[in-house]
Every structure is written in C-alpha cells, then in structure tokens.
Image: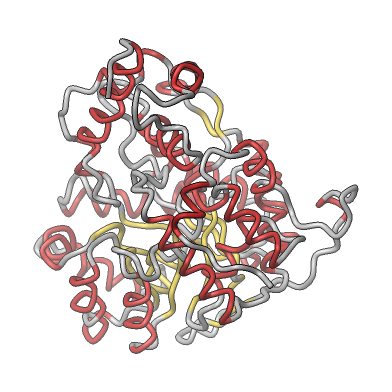
Length: 446
C-alpha cells in the first residue's frame, strides 16, 4: 500500500537525488523503456463544448507565451521554423485552441503565431488573444492594439477575446469603462468580429464574485483563471474561482496548470509517490490531469516550448483520464507540503520584462526556486556541506544568469511590480537573493 505523505518525510528528502528527479520529471509516458514518444500512437483528443456557441474545443490549448526564441534583449527573435513545426504537429494531433496576447515575448508572439496558423485552413483552429492595455488605458491605444492583433494574427475575426489581467472593479472601470473601451468591444462582438468575450483574472478571490456578476450586463462567454493543485486550496483559492464560474454556467479556461514549469520538477520523494501510483506517467501529467478534470473546463493552456512538452501533453489529453478521488486527496497533501517551502511564486510569464536596467528577473527567481525545491539553500554556514553547496550555488547562479543581469543591479524602481500578475514584491525578492549571494561570496555567517 502507498504510504501517505507527511511534512517531515517531505522535508527530509529535499536535496537527495535532485538530478534524478529532474530526469524523471521531464520524461514522457511510455510502456517500454526503449520506446520513444514519436513511436507512440496517440488516442483521440478530448474535446469540450462551449455552452454558448457549441464549439468543439480541444482540452489541450496551446499557450503562445513561451514560443522558442533566439537571442536576447534587443536581439530577441522568435524561432519561426520551430514554431511552424510545433503548430503543425499540434493541429495534426487535434489541438485547435491557440492563446496569445500583444505583450507575449515582448510583442513578438502574435505575429509568429499568425504566420504559423495562417498556413492552415481557418476552420482548423480557434484564435484567442487579449486587450493588454495595462500600461496605457487611453481609448486610442486600446483600439489600436485591438486592430493590430487582427493584423498580426492574420484573421478577420477573433474566436476568443479577453480583457487582459485585472483583479478588481476599480481596475476594470479604469481600463475599460471610464474610457469608453467596453462600448467599442461590445460593438465589435455585435458585428461578429469577436465570437466569444471574456477576461483573464489576476487578483484576490474576494474580488472575483463581483467581476463575474458583470455577466448580467456583459454576458461573459468564458473566463480565464489560474488553476492547479497547489492553488486549488491555497492562497489563490482556485476552487472558489472555479465554483463561482460553474454556478454562472461560464466556460473556464485554465492558465498556469504547471505553475511556470515548477510542478514538473518536484522533489524526489513526491516523484517516487507519483511513480508508485502511475509508473508510466510523466510528473507533469499529474498537474495537467488535475487541471483538465473539472467538467466546466473548456481548455487547459500549456506554453509548450519544445516538441517533447507537446507530445507528453498530447498523451495526457488523448484522451484525458480524470483524476480519481484518491489521487485528488494525494495531490492536496502534496500541495500542503509544497506550500511550506515558501517558494517565490514566479511563473516565468515574463510580464516584468524587459527590465529597464537589464536584469533577468525570471531567471534569477527561477534559479533560486530550483535551489529551494532541491534543498540546496543553506540555512547555516556551519552546515556540514557548506563549502560544496556554496560553490555549487554560486557557479550555478553565474551559469543561469549573466553577471550584468544579476540581482545586485536592481535599483528598486518597481516598474516590474506593476506588471507582475502574481503580485510579487520583486525588488524585495531580488534583494533577498542578492543578500544570500553576498553572504556566500564573503563566507559570512548566517
């Protein structure tokens, strides 16, 4: 019988065999160790029907925030050939929902997606994009952004259009009501250029009910929320968000099912528990099965940068095997223990980028989280493995983040805080990482 998880066992295993955990976590589900995913025969994709338009939408949706790129900074480019290959493979295997935004990949994603999708018949895919007027709420900026999305995506209508990233009524009024933008959007929907209208929520659950209740006025067709087994009963209260939408009969689109990839690389103890229950499944598949199981979920977005990510998710959703009640209870135990690690809640969305001072904010936070998750953050300079762990952290940090883009260059301008959908006090977290590094460099006691 599989034993239950307790926090003591969970913490004890951190740092033991983290490399093997990473190897297992990124593996794909196979029945034979010598068999590759390319040799697998995929089943039929699971589809969900939107209640308003009765559209058959693939449960696996393609999040276009993390297309493969080349270069960085001002030289950043999307690898168009790789994007084309990913889109072709996704459509061939039943994926038909592609989610975008004008701000993704520093403004490059919509155009790359439009090129890739434009090579396929229009009835083979649904396009979703957003009105990302977070930094400038003028009417003209919003209208221009809306029209530019049509040009970038090479379409004459948008299937799923979202008001992007807000979490309270005051922000909704400022960005969409007081400036007349909502009147414009409603006319576009009436004209048929917007087929489904919704919003993506980034806020506290206490504000959610009021925003959803606006469906009486604006008739939301769908709402996009962050949902995963960590957030289900956690501070973001995803269970409450889902149940509110279910009560209003509104389709649910899921973002961050994998928490920016964090739920694909849990520690060895959790890996062993998952493998004991489902030996042939990848670690990521647990998170995707959880996110796709609720009945009102229309599609689950995944930012699949590489072909192996796409193939593994296709295995999970072709078809979906819903989470059982025992598996649900198991994941709630995992979530409770995971939250005790106090990781920085960065999902690598890159909304904070580019930093005006060139700091690579996501890479810094993700590297620190990786070390926390694997038990490699030192609690004391008298730890028996201090010398080796100190060297490993500092060398790894320099490899993960270029010296001129590290945390010590932050001046606390707080521009990133305004953009972060997870509401992270980024300068404070960068200062914490920098202080830890400086203590290690100077061999200070802590």
